[in-house]
Image (cartoon, rainbow, N blue to C red; front, side, top):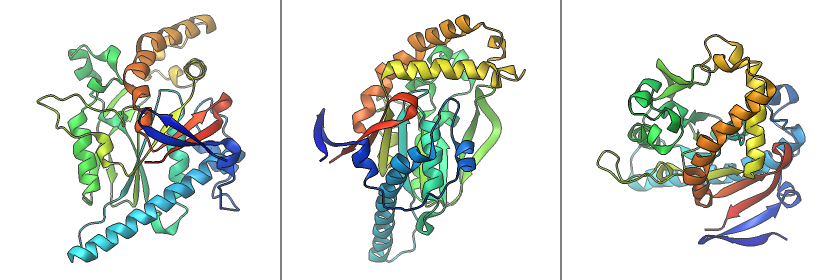
Length: 316
């Protein structure tokens, strides 16, 4: 039987892995081994069994929410006697650097597309709304990249407002993890989707009030939100392992922002990655990301090897 856990002021139903797995309705998987390999990130050995046990039930729950939302939108259009543009169901996905948010987002996009009611599913990352490196350097924020102040929050809110309003063509800037910067002149176009997944470390944060940012939160546009969680020591280990893997892959490219770190020894690489974590990513986690966890509708609690141990579902 599922247990009830009080997290701040919000009660969560806590389901063990086996309890969550038992909720799955589908008898087959809409994904094969080859497709899974294209979706998982570096150092994330997610198996088809993990997809079946964890991500399929999650996609099924999101399907329930999305179809109910679509039905309500249709009824509202009928009530007001107008053919207003369809408003998509928006899912927010948050969590620490290196916890596996991007893989989770890609898996959910793939799984949600399997339903004909909402086969058009777009995935947008908030990395595209980081200020360009030139702007960050001018403001002395390069060491704060990923912190709330490093994002063009008004632009992100305008983007989400236009998407939620059903605007037919909405553009989002594109970010390159190779050059570690915004790709000038390149955009992702969101065109009348049924569902939009918005993934990023900052999506559940509450902005600080000032004269340049409206008193509107990114999460105001979400219909369902997910937080991917794990113990910090585990996330740090994943971060270090990913850094070492990138040394032998992306960092070898002369165009890589981190090309200069390709020849670090294994010990040096571990020390450097640990330093980045302690001085930047870990600080951001504790100050800005982790405090937002209990604002999420659902928390995926990961253990070893990125396998989910339990799922917490907020009751209200």
